[in-house]
Length: 217
Picture (cartoon, rainbow, N blue to C red):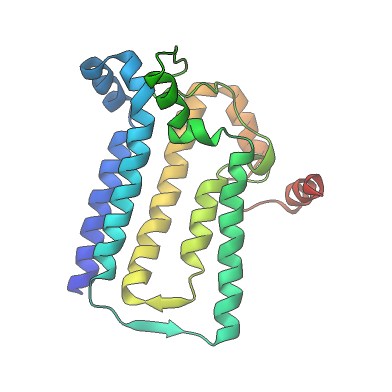
């Protein structure tokens, strides 16, 4: 029980800090301190690095806690579940076919910053100001979050600690999707409302999935 409480506490702190960093209020504060150009050039990359480092630190901390197996199925079951997890990874990765991955990570903004070039876009230097509804986003509204849900949920080697992490991570992905929808609805208005009617949040419709797969051929 102590390990479960430790994992929950660390994860909640992790989620709180990460959620805080994506808030517009925090970005505006950073811009007031560092300046608009510095914020557009550095904020996204700093957030990416911070996310990677803290995620690794949390995982190492959790792996260092005492643990035990709750369930570990036969080899055929484990491989089947790993294939499902791999499909989730492919789904999340497919999102970047319609998104500039270098801009998403903040690398493009950073290169412009150090070269003294103009950096457009919002406070993170994101220049895409349109609603993305193609590719994986035509199947579900949150392919990255869905990919994360699949990867965590279908882990076949279930331990006490991993089950705790899975529940917390799944709840965080769902919360993140809902929070993102509120932000996008506020930004795009009627256009996003119509998109919400056409495309499900997480569970793809068979017709939309078949059309997407057909386009991949």
